[in-house]
Each structure stands twice: as structure tokens, then as C-alpha cells.
Image (cartoon, rainbow, N blue to C red; front, side):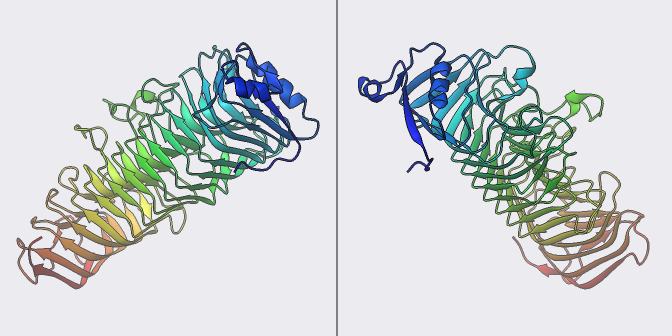
Length: 492
């Protein structure tokens, strides 16, 4: 059932609607500048109500502006099509507007400032976008855009809902949040449920950074809820938050992010002044924020499954086959779970009941990190980088400090399943099942107060009842202690 909107209803028929639909319509379009007829229908609603579009294609070469407390309703995304061209868009600039049950497409936008808008651009609060599907070519910035522009709508932008919406095969961002100006940059209380962004930017892109969902571009974000959503095959990250904005009280639950990062790996090492070396390629890119992931899934993403730092909390999340389809990991080293740097708050990162399966790189990489809490982390069959399946305080020189790592690791593809370098005040526990000769290695002259306790190493290669942990000659004497750690004879 469609949502209720008080007031009258004006029916608008497309030029290619059926005779029956035209017969019941209050307004009939002729297929040229149909936005004028749709706008006339809104203007006819004196105090709220519904503009009901019949089946067919509405050709719109200009903007449609729904009035406050109104609904624009179609007969289904596969039946009612709004085709926008020549800068035509669906602009929500008044409060309490509902868009329901239709399809939008935007093509051929001219150069100019308006190209930074979306096919559906929402400026005002209390909007609902329900069962709307859309696409666009690479001449505009987004299909669905939430934009705080104080010249259009000065109060904070808040209370926006997307349910059963899709952006598919686009040349641009699927869903994008942004803010212009310096006042009221926090977008609040946005809810997504059962939405999808598929192949955004994959076959031609507005810019090299097109993502499926971008929740924080220049805006801060607070009270975000994303549930049962899908990001698949997008040019860059599937679910994305930029580094600089503030992120507070954001929760993603039961989301799926697969095969994102479709653009090629860079061919040169990272340089801040060379954007050709910049690369996200994440299933979920969520740095520096109060962001929780609950039962989220990542598979086949090109660089990282989950990137979370300085406030990230992950519960029951799974990454599978990160780095799939790539072969040269000299410049980009994939990891299922990555956090660097992450050390400004306590805890800076929580991983609980999370799993890395069949990683083509690291299963877990933590650099320049402290106050990391890891419980019941499962690492299964990782390929590793340079023989190391994890990188804990390693590539940036570390340290990993003041942290707890409870890990259950298995596999023989990487020589070392746990590699800890320059750890300070870190406790390890768990279980390793591997027939390699160095399943757990600790190194680094800054190693201090490392404790390995309640750990079992199941191996057919190591001497039974030794502790099975290799300390390199760089580790200071007395820096590592052992309690209840032993090799158990066995095979995988």
C-alpha cells in the first residue's frame, strides 16, 4: 500500500500511456517538456496532496519542484519513467515531500555548476524516497543527492528516508551526501533500508572517485542508519565516508558489499600531490568516526574489506576473498580488515566475532595503533603478503600498543599467520592451526610488555609441547612473556 498523504490527487498521464490511463487523467502530457504539466499538477494542490503519474515515459527537459506536504507517485519503477535531460531534475526544496514508486534517468547535462547536483536532489528535511530506482550518465554528480545548501534551505538537513531504492549502471555516484557553505553542515537522522548501488561508475565515470554510497563528502553525519543494503561492482568503495567529516552515531547493519574497486590499481606508490596514486577500493571505507558495523559482509573488494579507525566498532562482520581479480600487490597490499592510524581514543577499534576468509593479502593489518580490542577473530586460509598473513604494527614501523588480540587462525598458504612487530603492552590469546614452521613471529627492538597466554598451536611441523612462537634477535630480553602456550601435535 502507498503511504498516506492528506489532500487531493491530480492524475497526470504520459504521452505513451494507455487509453484507459489517459481517460482517467486530469492532465495529459504530449511528450515534450512534460515537467511543465507535472509542475502544473503540483500547483493545483492547494494544501498538500498527491500528483499521481500513470504508466509511461515523461520527458522532462527542466526541473520539477514538489510542494511541501506532497507526494509524487508512480505506478512502479518498471512502469513510470521520468527521463530528465538538458538540466532537468527532481528537486526537493520544501519539507515533507514523498517520492514513491517510479524510475528516474538523467542524461546529457551541460557543463556548469548544476552538474554537481543529482537527478534527485534533496535540500529539505522530512523527505521520503520509497521504491524509486534510477540511473544517470557521467554528466552529473549523483543519482540521489542529499545536499545542504544554505541558499536553498538554511536549517539543518535531517530526517530523510530511503526505502527499497536502487541506483544501477550509472556513470556517477549512486547515493551521495554533501554540504555547501560552512553553517549547518551536519546531516542528521538519515535512514536507508533495502537499498542498492550497483555498477556505479564502472563503465564510465563522473570522476575517478565514484562510489556506491557516500555518506559524508563535505558534510558531517549524525544518526545514520543503513540496514539490508547492497553495494556491488562500483568504481571505488561500496560504502564510503570521507576522512575529514565528523561521523557520530552511525550504524550499518546486515549490509553486503561485493566486487567494489573496479578501477585498476595504481602503478606508482602513493603521493599526496598525485591523485593518480590515490586508491580506496574498499567494501566499507569508514575512517575516524563513531561508526558501527553489525553483521556486515564483504567479498571480492579490491583493496580492503573493512577500513575503520578511531571509533570503529565491528561485530560479526565477514570479509571473503579481498583482492580478488588482482595479481600484482607491490603497490597496493589488500587486507580484509585494515586500521591505520587508529590511536586517538579508547577503544580506537573494536573487532568482535569477525572473520577473514581466503584473503589474497593480509587478513588483519593494524599500524600506528593503540587501544584496539579484538575478540574471537577468525583468520581462515589467508595468502598473506611476503609470507605474512597479518601485519600487526609492521609496515609503518608501529607500534601496536595497549591492545588485546584474541585470534583463531588456520592455513598454510602464508608462512606466518601472526606477525607482530614493535608491539607495546599487547596481549595475545587464541589458537593457530598450521603446518608452517613459523606460524607466530614477534620482532622489533621496540617490543615491550607483550604477553602470549592461553594459546594453542596445532602443528605437525613444530616440536610438541614447545611454545611455537618465534622471537627474532631484535626483540629485547624479557620483552615477551608466555603463560599456558604450547604446540599440540596434529594436522589440519
